[in-house]
Image 1 (cartoon, rainbow, N blue to C red):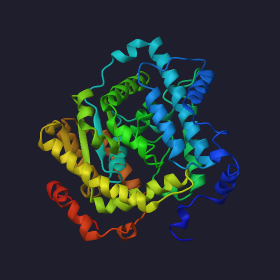
Image 2: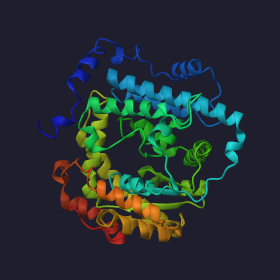
Image 3: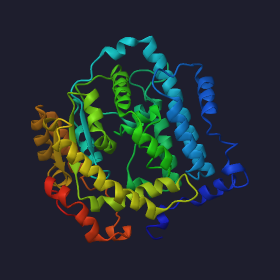
Image 4: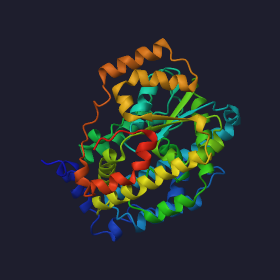
Length: 415
């Protein structure tokens, strides 16, 4: 089996989707994505009605319309997104009920959080997981991003059913395309991205990597990013009500495009930007996106995924450099970290980062980090290989587009 065929959905997926071929729009009536139906179902399931003051109607309508009209969803794709939207809506209702019952949760400050960001596939996940080894650091785990409230009657110290529920969702992705695990490791009890927090406002990059929905992408660029981070802070306050540790460490490549908004809500934040040769990660990220889309959509244009990333990367990096050069973000609260340095010397790189943060790198944190590096080297999970030649792009042309960025941050070439 060649690399490309191993990234195609399994035969059972085709058989399942065939059930919707004779249905209107691939199962639109069977699995509705109409906002009013989704909202009503969430209220009926929870017995709650208040979604909170945060915007709901417009983002949900824009997203659902794009999914219905542009994403070319298969029946399985409809089932997946319908379940996801239901979970988010029910979460919103339960979160609002908890905050209404315990308003003092929102009185606790989120002090000096650290945000890890950078281009996708540039080492953000690796750095986040390494920082997680320090017991003083509080990172959001996937199960609490997907299910932020513990179920009623949960016993302290007993297995949390949210972990198993999250793991079932991941297992479904692996059963659709078994090679997906090699591309991006997930686990119910592993750290994950802030895009799952933003998803509760139906304004998140999570869907831009899974569906071709250009009208939603255009709308999202115009939406209020500060509202996202205000919700983000409330979400962290909710999580730390049950588990408060010293330092929040968050991660998402999408933060790179929203640093002014991030600092407006978290003025004492510190942002760590990972840097890696964009040509090394361009094909890998595009292939990951195409694979995610193939789980959900009837038609996937892999070349279009490459073109989208090739057009977006230079713009994003130039915008980032401009914001820093013009003082639009606090330069003294940003640390640049090269992926090659992190891989070559994880412990030394983190010790340097702690010095930059003005934090003590404890003996326990060092020991746990050294143990993690010894048992799972930085490249141990890097089984997803995608050569630049497979993008179909011209190497010299693309290399020239990143010359300023590479020189400015002294990023070594990997292609």
